[in-house]
Amino acid sequence: MTNGDNVLFEPFTLGDLELPNRIIMAPLTRARASQPGDVPSDMNARYYAQRASAGLIISEATQVSQQGQGYAYTPGIYTPEQITGWRKVTDAVHAAGGRMHAQLWHVGRISHPELQPGGELPVGPSAIKPEGSQVFISADSGMVDIPTPRALEADELPGIVEQYRQGAENAREAGFDGIEIHAANGYLLDQFIKSGSNHRTDDYGGSVENRLRFPMMVVEAVKQVWPAARIGIRVSPTGSFNSMFDADPHSTFRALARKVQEAGLAYIEVVEDSFQGNHENGRPESVIDAIREEFTGAYIGNGAYSRNEAIERINAGRCDLASFGRPIIANPDLVERFRQDAPLNEWDASTFYGGDERGYTDYPTLAESQ
Ligand code: PHB
Image (cartoon, rainbow, N blue to C red; front, side):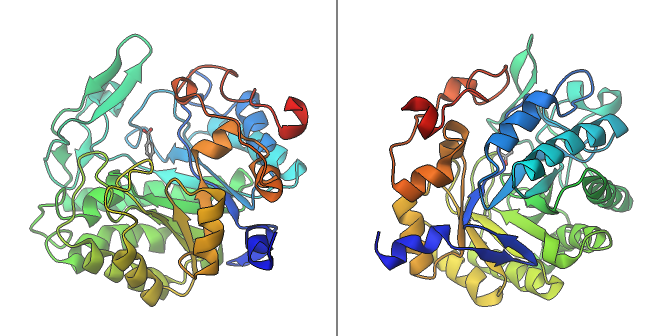
């Protein structure tokens, strides 16, 4: 290793949290919460504890209400049982020496009446159907098309902000070290941010300032519960997953970064592709520049990073930390394997969503496979 190669394995202060390295476990939907009630289980605790050597674990996306759920078997953080379940997870991660943030999630229009309270339509900023997107509603029905959502009334927004605030409070009760606001990948906050999904003509749509208003209300609400140093936000400026589009991601996300700077959050995690590592046009370097110019907190790069690309980009000042998804699903000891530059287990995409221990807690460590 040259000196620069060490950078991934050096401690990093994220907000006021001391991380032993710069390798972050990205938020990853695994759809394995126990039923009924979408409650984190002992199996989920084992999975996360196996990955506790990461500098920070960000939980899988976790709905703040039933209205915020878009897929069967994803965990929630709004019932006492769910809070108790998450406490088992955070205790296991802490006992294994790790740190963990809860990712707070509301899917907005990416849902289905079968998952919604009272069988109602999913809600979004505007009644615009996400063309081509599907959600998984049950083992029997599988993936189904999404209906046109109902546009939220402005007077409903404070109630949703309160769902996030309560989720933040529940995350504290559940023993998390902090929270990440999910504002990426075409879910509710991203739907407000981007021009393609937000055609509102009131204070919450139109100008960039207006489109950022509701997401920033959420930021302010969770700051009533957590110090800003323990809060991050995830965005996907050029993401097209879930039928997303923004006419000017450079300006939109420059403005967002400026507001997140004013709010003093610890970090911005940026999905630097269209989805799941699809770099048709490379990483969106000019958007990354704009965010880094406005935001002096930590920048977590995400999107199919290899070990060496993470090292190169940190050394080049393009990111401060890197979050990994599929490699850390398949390699619970990803940090040690990266340290040794050892070979990685391959992931099995067929076991990403739903199921049991298989493809979840049974990937071997380097020591186990030797
Ligand atoms: C998914 O369940 O497919 C999913 C969830 C959260 C994301 C992206 C994808 O941010």
